[in-house]
Image (cartoon, rainbow, N blue to C red; front, side):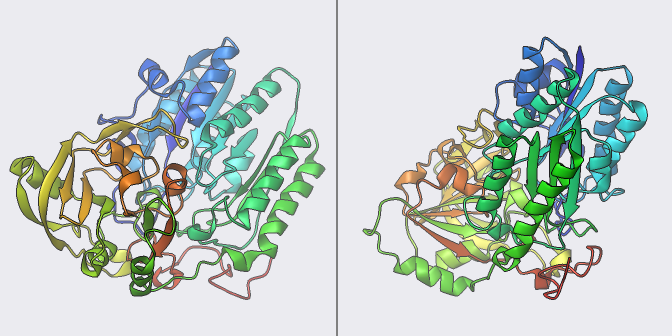
Amino acid sequence: MKIVIAQMNHETNTFSPVPTPISRFARANSLPLEGSAAISATRGTGTAIGAFIELSELAGATITVPVSGHAWPSGPVEDQAYEYMCQRICDAVAQGCDAILLDLHGAMVTESYPDGEGELLARLRRIAPHTPIGVALDMHANVYPAMVENADVIAGFQTYPHVDVYETGRRAGAALFSMLAGKVSPTMAWGQRPMLPHVMRQSSLDSPNREIQERAAEMERQGALCASLFVGFPHADIVNAGLSAVVVTDNDPALAQRWCDELLDMAWKDRAQWVYQVEPLEKSLARARSIDPNASPGPVVLLDHCDNAASGGTMDTMAVLDGILQSGLEDVAAFAVFDPQAVSEMQKAGLGAHITLMLGGKLDMPSLGLKGQALKVSGTVKHLSDGRFVNRGPMSKGVQMDMGPTAVLDTGKVEIVVISRQQEPNDIECFASQGIDPSQKRFLMLKSRVHWRAGFGQLASSIVECAGVGVCTSDFSVLDFKNVRRPIYPLDLDAQH
């Protein structure tokens, strides 16, 4: 038995100015891994592709991995990068296989295609019209008909922060191997509701998503092969952005549709709870100053949630960091500012050097009508590294991360991690690898929305959400939506389904 396994993973923020060339899909290389190198790098990791490899090896299958590419969210994927990965996957399938397992995202927009995953699946179906295809998707997938029409099994994450990525690969892969064994005949239902849930209200640790994801898991215990509620990614200005659901059953299309509708109705009924209310930054920082340090142990998390890597942020907007410095907060560790030029300057200055930098603000944000604004900061170069570390987990456990050349600037009150490749602070190692113990800090400034809770949730004594600026803003009024289907809630409060 021969299985083609591939990873082509990207969440596209169409408002982001951050480019997405093929190198963004690579780790410490110019191209994504493939073949034995990809298998070695992903085997045993907390990833969907890792689960696919494990299941295939247990089945005694021959494995082909034509590409393993994962990129942090950013602007539309360059056509050259997309075609590079697609061609390798298609060529591998064209050589013949018994099944295809794909670790995709579900919200990839390219320069030419609003639905990158659906286009890939359609190409594969033309090459192998009867070969079973199983797909693992992110909870933030913006699902298009082409994805459902050209796959046999689809499973999406049921947690946000995404601590079940490996488990999702197991769910999709197990259903597909049961199909190969003739034990099940997958039937799939898909549906949408006209909703663009704010990312800051999408966590599966909170209502209403907590209860919906619990119900999806219960459906699987009750016999569904896979049940997934996709919250969607609202920062992709495409027709099908937003909430959807996919349920896969064993030869029971009516049950699949009924359960799919149930998940969608649960989300629609509580649609007002998916709307995030933005608090002015000055008020947030005032609250942070008023928190009693003796009230509970652990750092206070200051979320710079408009500018995070996991939603396509530049990670170089400075409004929140400037506010922290101006407010007089002390004993702060900040992760992170994307500024390769500043890292280079600190490398040249050397460890222990005192340096003044124009930090951040290198990238303009045309979609918001904003120019980058650097912040003048002085401090001591405290740490220099290559920026590579391995995640402890629970999110993406065992995966090597690459922030590029990295430096820590210590202002005396704030230790600022400065990086050369965007990186979400979802794991303690992003600090520990730079000589910072986050548990011993009074405040942690994190450019994150929800994923920080995977690595730091148990550390935090309090959370203060700080609305700075950036293309991950939860203020939809500053985003110029032109392509998303209308009416849609909450852009249109009278939207109906």
